[in-house]
Amino acid sequence: MTRLLIVGPPGAGKGTQAALLSQLFDVPTISTGDIFRANIAGETELGLQVKAIVDAGDYVPDTLTNALVTDRLSEADADGGFLLDGYPRTVDQVRYLEELLSSRGHQLDAVVRLVADTEAVVERLRLRAVQLGRTDDTEEAIRHRQDVYRRETEPLLAVFREKGLLIEVDGLGPIDEVSGRILEQLAARGITAPNPSAASGSGV
Image 1: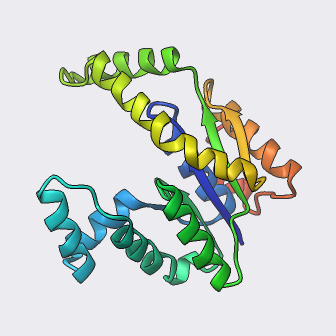
Image 2: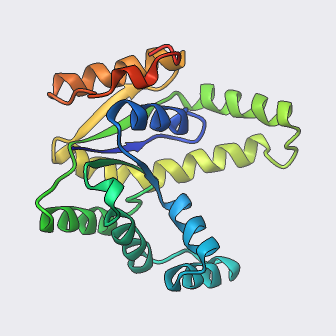
């Protein structure tokens, strides 16, 4: 019953590592983006509220995001653990998640932070944008997203560090090497993957 959170700057390979960890620990990856899209597509009551807010160009408020995450964590596949990606994004959301899990007799086991040199990430994303023909993905836009990430996550990292949950891993390098670093640090905390064969063929 492993409950993890993964954070990292755009371009650090967070999505790739999240997918691998989800397989290794046999838990669902839960991202707010996926939750929003699923509820909007399903035209649920919460989804209709999100759609109206997004269509208006506004940010989804904490109360609604928390409600959607609560609903998702209540589904059967999350009973045995989960990997959160993209939530929490604010200190208030951190507090809410902590209280929610505590009310169910649970808690986060660890927060994995992928650390990556900004210049290396910017270069990686710039080359990817060129390869994909994304002319709107300029270096200025890429750097802006990096700045937003740092500004939004620093307060959260401070909270997780104080709680002793934070694991910081070099996110640059071959996928299997990064995964190995994550697993090594998790194992040092007594958190071991019950399903190592799931990553066979991935190089892990």
